[in-house]
Length: 365
Image 1 (cartoon, one colour):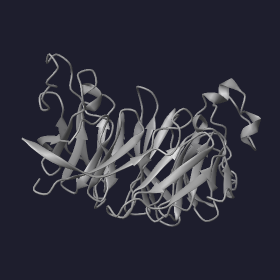
Image 2 (cartoon, rainbow, N blue to C red):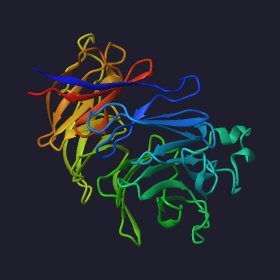
Image 3 (cartoon, one colour):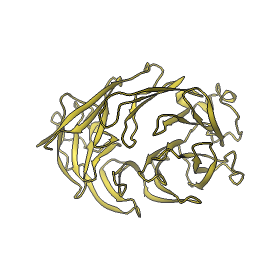
Image 4 (tube, rainbow, N blue to C red):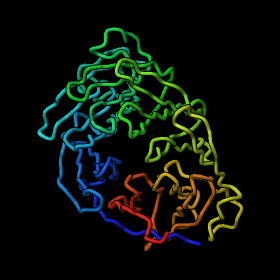
């Protein structure tokens, strides 16, 4: 049995991949912004509202090259926030920096509170420094930042421990923060429909790597650990459930957001058929990314384990029972994982990383 995927739209990369990352689609209510980070700028193109077609384009000058940090764009498409080695910065399309919050250096051996990128631009150690991550809340009011302390503008963070902070998007004020008790090499945040909640996956190598859940009540940021040696890959449309994958990628785990408890899981081995071009001896495992099509349906891939045998395979998973329903049939071969885009859609990136394809299930599936 197969489920048919319908192509909603195709969008091409705006920047040359020689100096830019592959494009990605951010998941915001009612719209799909295509974002691509280059060394000199970030481009955000609106793919329309609910399939209405391509919209306006915004370009944000980058304060440092792409290797030195991460970036995200606001739900309204009017601001970009950069997480760097020494600071979090919000930029407007005009090139104006609305605010900057400096923080401890991402190079753990450096105790300097840098004032600008130029101070370490040519230093080899800082080239491999950590840079944390940032995310907008669903309504664009807050910026959640995972960085090394201390934070400028917050006198009580006077050490170099890692913190997860909630900033006011309008002016960069530090509203609250919590010590994550981690030593991250990387991190990634997953937004929740409730602007006062956010998920955080922290990479600490083979051991550690916790998943944290944050709640902002307007006065305090509370953080709880809801998994260890896992990656948070998706949040359901209602916000009641989330999906994680162990570092070993052997299972999809459905969890309850309210208390982080594990509800059900789906193992790949002995459940997902081996690739038709495989001899059957290789291990089948899930990708580190997946998407909720609706509250009860998940699109998950085995593209990484399929890569040596041919085209990627994606699967429909019933979230109620965490059982495998059927393989997804595409009008042409796809590559890489299925990534969440919201509004009943998911997206894939072409093998040459030049195009993004937005998908939905065909009627009758």
